[in-house]
Image (cartoon, rainbow, N blue to C red; front, side, top):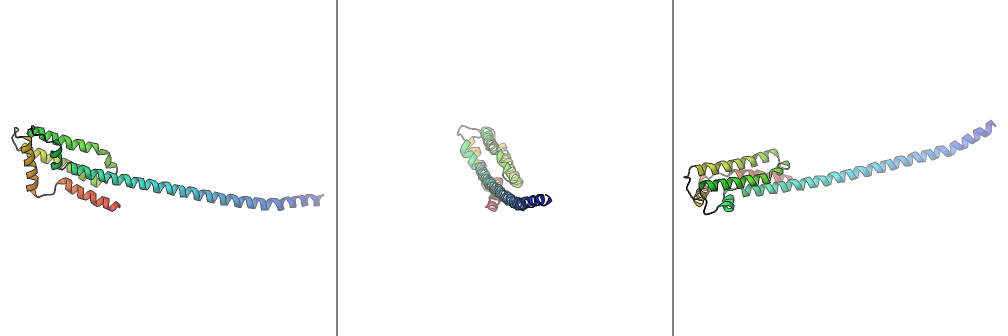
Length: 179
């Protein structure tokens, strides 16, 4: 009897050991395949997210370039000037327009660098300050068109680059670096 029990155990082991070995090997191969597949999918998701973020950043730079162009005194004057305006009305309309444009683009600071955003804010503030300074040196009853002409002439005579153009050049360089 001892031989028959040993024989049965031996036969069971002869069948079980190869089966378990094949099963473990199969499990390891499938597990490696599944891990590899998951890693590839994760890489694809990250790549797609990176492309999407890149596009959002480029769009933000485009919007901020447009903002900087729109706050140029000549552009603002063209949008808000009414022949019936007087000095303070034109000044207020220009400042209101610039602030409205800025508020419309506030969310873009998420996508541009801190340095670029600081230049944009500074450009806005400097243009508002310049408008106020020029208009404050003129009589209150000066017509809007006269104030507009003086603002544009002052800018031309200064020979300096406007703050929005400085910020614009900085943005262009940063955007080129992303391409």
